[in-house]
Length: 165
Ligand code: FEO
Image (cartoon, rainbow, N blue to C red; front, side, top):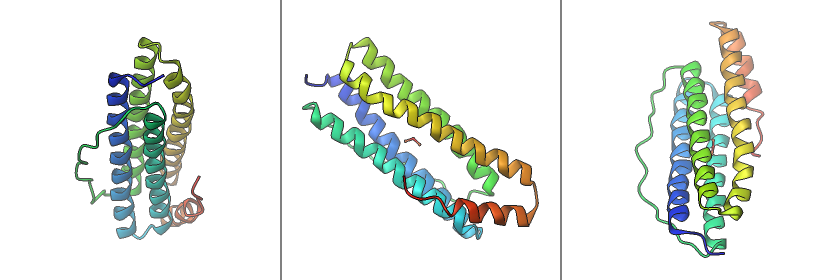
């Protein structure tokens, strides 16, 4: 069944949000590179790639339902984040915001009795649990490390091992 105009427009807005997320994570990666945390920067670059993949998955879904999308512009991404803690706390709160957006899409699909979109969104609902958990775990680790340089360097090395999922 062809996707409704309202559902298609809501997904277009979500595609924009996913690309905006990628851009935000790229700005965070730039700040972490600048602060000499190459492992954390690499983690953020992988995160940016994931966000693009999230956007593309929505893109393909809309066209598989005979819809179309619009692509409004992206906002400038913040650079000059002050510390790994500031970065990962912002990432965690951003992912909570994205979860609310995904839930909003699901609410709309439910309202419209759009079963295909509801089923499709299950993957994102699950993914958001992981996205929040990963960011929050890192925030907690950084808080435990406190001001220990060796602790931060160890975490940097660990985060650098993240592979693209
Ligand atoms: Fe696309 Fe980080 O959620």
